[in-house]
Length: 67
Image 1 (cartoon, one colour):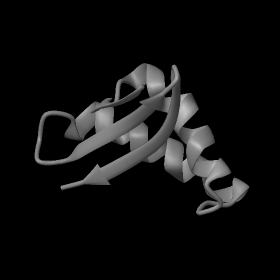
Image 2 (cartoon, helix red, strand yellow):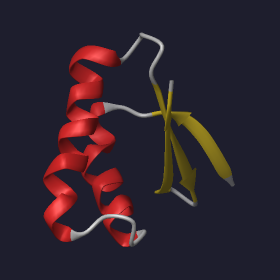
Image 3 (cartoon, one colour):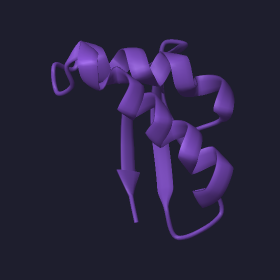
Image 4 (cartoon, helix red, strand yellow):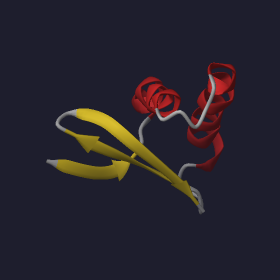
């Protein structure tokens, strides 16, 4: 079953792995991706920025960031 929900700080490592596995980001870009999620939780959560995660069969499989 698929579930789409807002991300939580606990999702960060799994979502960084999803970003890397997607092929859209190189290993060198992983720190920037992680910083983006951490910045979201520190300053943007609850604002007009939204990050949603796709959870399938208990695993995080996708992410969408929009404003």
